[in-house]
Image 1 (cartoon, rainbow, N blue to C red):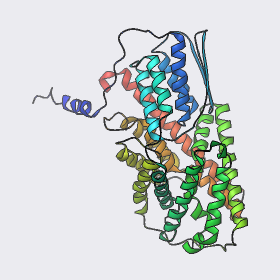
Image 2 (image 1 turned 180 degrees about the horizontal axis):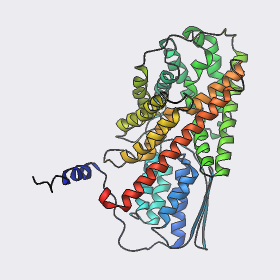
Image 3 (image 1 turned 90 degrees about the horizontal axis):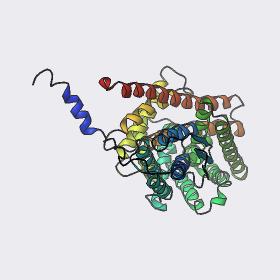
Length: 433
């Protein structure tokens, strides 16, 4: 083989594993302004319901709109609403119906948006497909979903408080909270009181026998089971929105997250009041350093089931969770534990964006959502608030929660900025690709 032929081999290998980029439609623009506005409304509200930051939703919809209209497009996105204007005659307003972290739904919405970003689907078809995606049911039934949540609880327990003594407590309390969450799904009007009820029940059970039997502190036992109703994702996205200049969206999302934490803490206080007095417990002996790597696998299994991940995404969830947690661990070598999450978040962004281009991988949003769950900023926030309520800490402990949330948000923002800049340069310079 000549020297001129050798450089072609890596390119051929790359093309063989890379997803094919859809081709733009060639029949010309056939969609009017009303159809374009309807498409942007359906795609935008679907992305918002999948817990996407509002500034990223606005930017993505603007990119999509360029493929379908030459009219000026105005988009205003909020955590619970979307306003779209195309030209001077087409207006669309939509509100959030069902916020979700259901990964198969998020993956389907992202795939439709990717087609629209290159003009490979008509506006009418994109709107119809996005509306259908918003109604997708979970892949697994209620019982299987509860099992998935229980497994997730064990994995988070191995990250937050990896002790053999507490392991069975995580299983029991995780199953209880999972059942409460599933029982509350058919009754949306109960959502405001669900965090308080779940926290009270878990605390009551833990003070009754779990924490004492595990010989571990109360907050260390009850934090992992409450992961599903901890507003860690809302707090992190709110911090990202504030840092990117979205003051209204960021502030409202942060207020919502803090309110949810307050409801949880109230439930814990209620459970402590109703339950038996629990003497302070010394932390149990920790598992070895290997527990983190086992926890990565356990969390990936649990999230795959509980969040209804798309088929074929299991290996990629393991990798995404692994990048987040191992990056966080590496960050702890030269940063404080409070700020180490920034490294994990920073590494996850380019990993998810690049991995999503491989044929067998799910969309980037699927991997990003799983990674954010793995970083559990809400667990730290809840534990520090709970320490203050239980008399085990003071107001200064809240500073660590705030720092952890903003460090993860900052790491994500920097990751997106660096990756988008490099990717843009490569797209403009074909010889470098």
